[in-house]
Amino acid sequence: MCESSPFRAVSRVCWIFLSGLVACGGSTGVANGDPSTVERSDPRGTPPPSDGAGGCHDLLPAPLGPPVEEQFEQPEEFACWGAPVIDGEGHLAFDFFSSPFQSASWRVLDSAGTTIGHFGGPRLVSIYPQQDGFMGIPYPEADFVPLSLNSWSSTGALLGSTVVTSGRSYAVVAALDPGGGVLVFRTESLGTDERQLVAQRYDQHAVARGPALPITALRGDESTAGTVDRLGLSLVVYDELPGSDVACFLGRWIRTDGTPLGDPFFIYQGPIRSYGSLQLAPLIGGGVAVSVEGRWVARIPSGRPHALPPPHWLTGRPPSLLPIVRGGRAYAIPVPTAEGEQPQIELVTAQGRSCGRFTLPTPARSVTIGRDGTVAEELNYCHYQWWPQLLE
Image 1 (cartoon, rainbow, N blue to C red):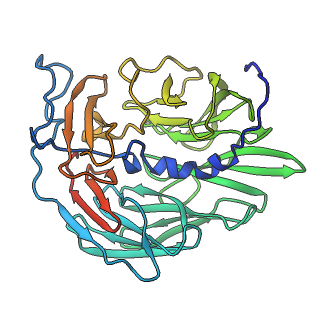
Image 2: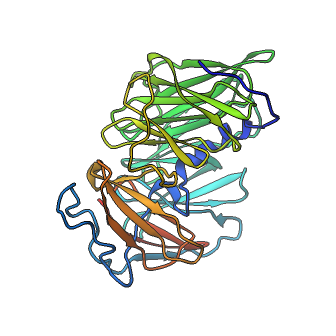
């Protein structure tokens, strides 16, 4: 299925471990894959084309009112860490940590800025917003240490906890399920030098939806990624030529109940320099777009065992997580900006028609769009502002 190439010493083991951060974080200054904005010169942003077609009606937000603002006092033992994570009800979870690989304390605020809960424990690889609450997996202290998938309500109550690794597992990561829960995939040792990639679906209470599914035997430090599309099917992608200067990515679909949907299939083969350059972005209506080395390379229709060229409207755009807003009618695509500039977001319909850009009023370290359309800016350490349900 793949043509081999000369091998090169490229370490990729860290990417499997860190890809949870990529899944929850954005690129080009946008965190959690969710941004937005309003121009100072034109508070309605860049207007869309005037032909009236393509479903642009009401996609751009009205001029922004005053944001909700919060500046936390820096705790003595903990430091603020990054952008908030926003669930489907507009609750914002803020991360405070004592060191990147030790304990963390999450504070949850409602959309008006009132603290409604806390949860804590070991530092999380990443956190996954649910409709009402959050899920996460802690950093492992060492290889082959059992790890638990935890689920919390928005007030911090523990809703469920399930061990997702055995004593033979390491390099665990998860991907958000837009219907609730997560897809977890892990590297599992079979003894000696043999390993395999295993995937499993869990609901929003951390209960397994079905059995663990072995995806493939692993021969090296493969780049690996996974996602769940808008129709509820999971896609796991892995490199068939680990350690080579040419990657060959194969994919496999998984049903909602955790059973396989067809055999592995070819997606893309080409040069690769960065072990973290593989990104997957669910598309409106189902299916997944794939980017490698900073460019879009394929579109995979939902449940189909083949790859197609990427949509024409993605060609030339920088890779991003393609956050879906306005009740599933549009994408909010970050526009690359220089440091110190106001963040810009372009709204694009499901068919790829640009409906214009808008700009947030304040330069920010990062911008986040929540599942409910709340738009939040991290202005500086421990200093945030947000507009509730701006893009609902």
